[in-house]
Image 1 (cartoon, rainbow, N blue to C red):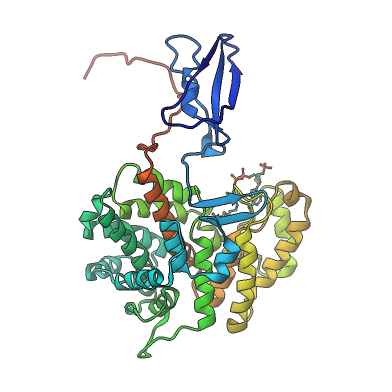
Image 2: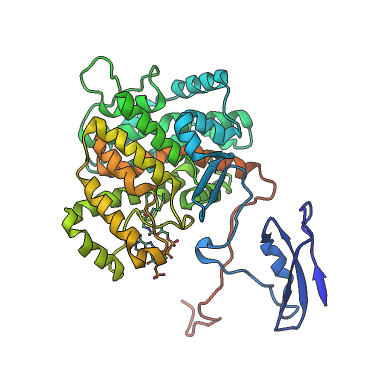
Length: 438
Ligand code: ACO
């Protein structure tokens, strides 16, 4: 017997997956659309009338598309990354971070006028409520800045209760602007708190990256002037981190956002996901690893430990890229420019030696392990003077527009509902308690 289902409103190419259930002998045609079957179509496949229906089991979502998205395209085998169709290589040399943020959010690059208005809008919203400072003051002097960022992002929701109106486009835009504008301020304040320095206020005359450097480094000078090479390098690094389709933190943003919570709370969840050492925390771990290795001659022994399964080579490997990470290629060029200003980071020699040995080694070749964006970003950040604990925070500043664009897209998608995966229960069957009731 052949059954065929059509999801309402879903265009089908006419291609089908023909499956036969060996339990019943029944056959089904599952429509294939955009190279995927609809998981809900599996539900009709039942061993008996009482059966719930077939589930697909996909721990860690290795082969499950959770949404349709028009924002970022990645071809992991070819090492391709595009935002809204534009190659990352073009954007890195021809655009600014704020224009890329505009592109991710609106689908098109801004015109000159739009770009100017957008920059002004962001610059206007960089200040945070003075109570945020008190809130940050409450953290211990050695609190990790990423912990402070996660908490203060969530705290922002209490200052803007109107952010709950997530379907109101005007309100939505306000929160998007505030989040992009304020995240560098929160990040810099977290750093200054750790250093025991007074908070440096935003300077609307500076670029987005330049103002962040101002809030980080301004001391007694009446006006902070960022080094243009470092300002530009930071801007490029932010562009490279701006979006990366359905990664762990972006999925967190979408999943938490699907509960219709305000975007500050969803962004705090996304930042928390980014904090982990397997995700945005990897750049921090790379530097800790390079420090632990300490010198070039100790690299082979370290590689040996990695191959024995004792350790992971941080900054290597990617769930999607299995050939090379195009961001890592661009970052190497940025590193050269930065080192001309700052002097060469001694960690670079250890990193280059690790890369050289790993890329020629059978283990890394067969496991398709290549340097990812985090392998070199930390070395650049360190040369620029950022402490290691700030690295994931820098990543979060760059990723904010991506999180917001994905959040907006998810909210507007009629196929989306509150995210709620299924499970396969493997616990005890029904059992009863004996003895008298208390
Ligand atoms: N060093 C050594 N071996 C590795 C590494 C690594 N960095 N990454 C993967 N492997 C090995 C695993 O041990 C496994 O080997 P096995 O099949 O012999 O057991 C195999 O490669 C596949 O590894 P998985 O963990 O299944 O790959 P997955 O796609 O789940 O992981 C990840 C991707 C998390 C990025 C992983 O490569 C990793 O831990 N890398 C180091 C951390 C890192 O750099 N993260 C940043 C990612 S980029 C970003 O978030 C911006």
